[in-house]
Length: 257
Image (cartoon, one colour):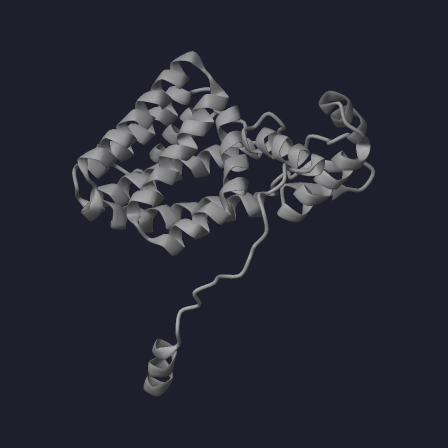
């Protein structure tokens, strides 16, 4: 192996890199349709289970059905669209198992990211996170759900960026589309966006304390609420606020004051 490494080091650099062609062309019609549909899905404009009717989409985008059909096929390969018998193409509707897996994996990834963030956290990073939380609080007051969803996602994405673990961030980015559908779904049914913003404020306060244990604790608390919102999303009859109180009551030790 050492000899191999030495031989590789002696290889001369190629002074003339291969020609990769001229400027890139404009995006094709299917690519433009994909971009619009994908954006509508991940921001919650097209909710899980929504049928994607080729003719209607083509009319709205003033194009033929061919590019729309191709775009829907591309989204199906990405995992954002599924073909349902007797219904056609629909936005992916998570089943309970997939939702639970997405939430649990997201929580574990972020808890690890937070443990890396605290030693690296600078004043600029805190200011960036503060700006995002303030934006969420403002969007919550106006009940601007789509804006809130975008800021929510950017807050968590910023944590992974600050962590400085490139593979971890790549894993997060590779899963972002499904995460954003999930995020849009939970925030769409959670009318108390102010409470969600408060939870992000708590994460920021914990990070600012520069204590990794506090950061991990705040993330665990946040995703415990996410799991309760999941139950509500999947058909529970109690809103998340009541569910949180009832769960705390059930988990309290008997006879405790």
